[in-house]
Image (cartoon, rainbow, N blue to C red; front, side):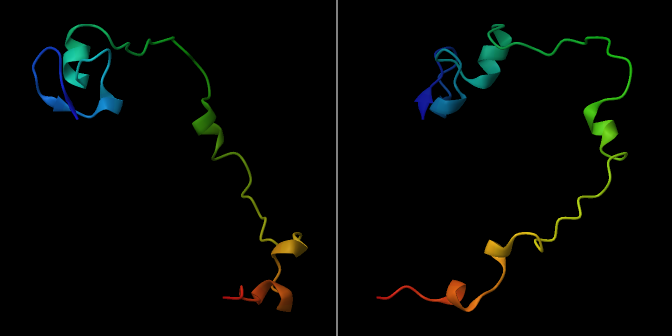
Length: 76
């Protein structure tokens, strides 16, 4: 935790922007916003409903199947 250069509030270092806390950095214009691109049409999240359900249940992966050798415990 380090103090913000503007207000002195203790802030986690990984959340600081050039030594300023998150709120102070936004007030000073140091963080970018999102831009509306005017996208018209389906989004990737819209296509999730169209995609079929993934039916992988592990039957095709013999290495993951239960076997007597896979249940051995480590010595010690």
